[in-house]
Length: 365
Image 1 (spheres, rainbow, N blue to C red):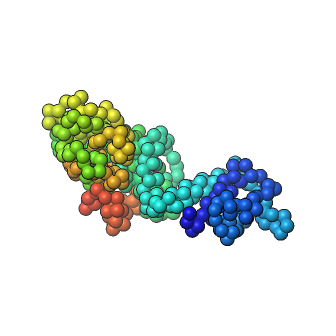
Image 2: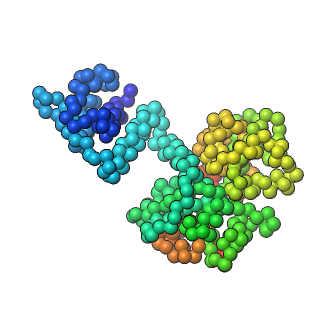
Image 3: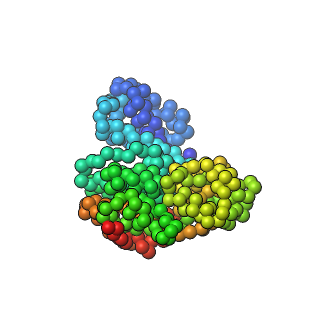
C-alpha cells in the first residue's frame, strides 16, 4: 500500500474512534510496533500518524507510559461536529485516492451524488442573510459546480442554497417568494422561444431578468459504444430499448413530449417512458448501471459517466431573477462572473455547453 497516504489513514482511524467515544480520555493506544504489524507498514509511518494526532491535541506520548488519549471535546460542540464531518470526508478521500482515483474524479463524483440530495430538499423559507441566495429549478451540473464555489464567485460569506425541482417548479418557487433565482429551460413550441413565455404566465405583472447561464447540448444518453445504434427519438420504440425519462414539469420532459407529439409518436410505445428521474445525473447513472439502455439528458451528464451521446438539440438555460433580487450584490457578482473567462473555462471543463451568451440579460416586463 502507498505509504504517502497511509499515515493519514492510520491517524484518521484512531481519530474516528476518539470522536465516536470508542476511545475515551485516559485509554492507552496500541504500541507502535503492534500497529506496524496490523497495518503492514514501517515504524516511521505509525510514528508520523501519532505525531499528527498529538498535534491535534487528541493524544500524548510519555516515556514508560505509552501513548494515551487526553481529550474528547463535547459532542454538542458545533466546531467539533463540523470537524468530525471533515475528518470523515478526509477518510473517504484517502480511501479512494489510494484506490487509484484522481482528485478530479472524486470532485466530480461528489457533485453527482449531491445532485440527488438537492433534488429532494424542501423549499426553504425566506431568510434575511444578506449574502445567502436561494436557487430552485431545473437540474444543471454547472449549478452544482457554482454552488460549491460560490464564495469565490460572490465574495466572502456568500452562500448559494440549491434545490432541484424542475423548470416549472423553480418558476413557481420564485412566484411564491421561495427562490431568488429560478433555473429554467422551458421551450414554448408556439413561439419557438425559451423561458420568456412561461415567465409571463407564471409571474404576471412582475419585472424579471432572464440571465443566460449557457446553452446546453441535449440528446440521447447511451451506453458506451452505442450498441443498439440509436440515433433519433423514433428509435426509442425499437425492440430491446429501455428508456429513462425526466419528471413532469422539467424542461427536458416538456421538450420531449412536444416533439413526440410532432412526430406522431405514442409515449406508451416507449418502454420506460414512465421511468422518471429527477436529474440529468440520475438519467446518466441509470444508463451507466444498466438499469436502462437509453435516456434523454445533457451531454455533460453523459461525459461524467463516460457514456455515449447523440445530439438532438441546443437549448437555452436561463436564471429567472425578479428585479428586486437583481439589485443584490451576490447576484450581481454571479451575473458578472458568468460573462467572464472563468465561467467559460468551467463550462469547457464540464463539456456539453455553448457559453457565447453566458451572462447576457434580457428583461421581461
